Image (tube, rainbow, N blue to C red; front, top):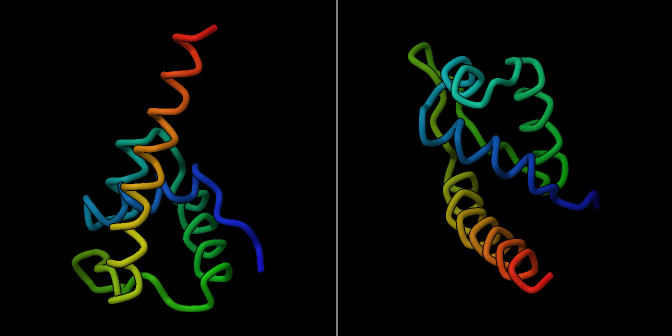
Length: 89
């Protein structure tokens, strides 16, 4: 199984929050194909579909909602760790 990458988690959270790959791309300054690849990598890593695609955008699946919840925790801890280490150096 491939490891989850922080950047893919960040992209996924933004996609979920905005409900649109296009809007997330604008917000993040990343192309829509790059976001699609990030979602695909996450789906391969967890072995399940994370987003339901609708005409109006995307909606996280049940597993996608759980990943988003846990991604908030992981990313928060990562940012805190980076800040603490920066302050220490």
